Length: 512
Image (tube, rainbow, N blue to C red):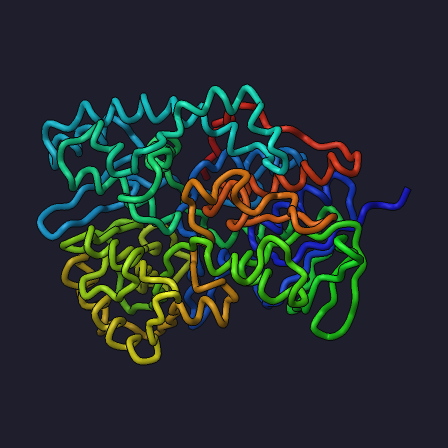
């Protein structure tokens, strides 16, 4: 019997994970990537001797990725070199800073130093949210292509832990009295592109995960994950075609039979996996009038995440006293978040994330220099901000704050390489719908079966992977989306596949 042929549109981490699993399971796999670099928002940016991650810089729940490599008979440590970060990050307010650790005793001592009287709340959070995580995680690994998924006893056991009616910030009030300490456990909502004052309480599992399993750096940058996945795909006989843009999906009725490339070539397939940004794919890869559910009108009504203003800076100095990750809070954080997520206006006093990865990894910049990555949450393109007009002044404001509030002395004078990505660039150059860097919003109306489904409901023979489908955005959940879709495909075609355990296997990665 000939191998089933799967065409995967997009070589982001979700598409490459699917390709790795399916190639190992005996499928003929063809990955089509329009860019020269693999990885999508997980691709590297290389210039002038510097290397930057385009997007994700936090690696959590590394055991998920390790488990997928193990399915193929490989050790992830043979492909990637990991460093555990301590402190996890520096959280900086104007008058204080907090440096939590993956060591719970050290974090408790740090809370006692900076926020005295809140220490016991940390232990309660880890216990309570740990139980929530153990109940909810199996639900995130399930396929919601059918409403029958809600009848699974796993879902019934998890339902009381959804935290309905409470927000992330409200939920943290159960553990901490100090509002700034609460904020230190809410900034993770940015992974979802949401405000902690509207983000569902169930996402309190995000800070729990960071403190429970730690945050890792991959030597060479997190972009090396996509390179490692691609290496396994090719070792398993899969084909990866770079600089190969897909023009449209080819349909026979409601059945996808392949893809047509920009150069006119057609590739037939038994199934197509879409790893392109969901909203962009719906707008561009199908003829007008084909979509029944995700019509242009429906897409305009769907909630999307915030965007990000990015600076990638090659700097002629080092910052050995500043940690790998820093979050610099706006003086009025709630006002800043409201402007980003609700009023869609540009903040005069933004919050800023700075990655000083060269303090951990000497491969990212020439000796005596630093690769500095700056991310600023800003409104998506529904805010209609003119970035050609606003970009230079906003860049100057961000750099001034990084120096003054963040302690990156001499940053502006030391820049010898600079690249900028604005929300307009995310949409037009990187093909991200509405410039929403973190994809579709993660409110209850767009979770589980209410999110575009892994086995796409619009067409036969089409599966989705990436942040625009279940379970959502963020590297660990994107890896899970790939496993869910790959397993669903194998089940549909009678191919063998591995089912993940009902609780996460938290076996740690061996550190170099």
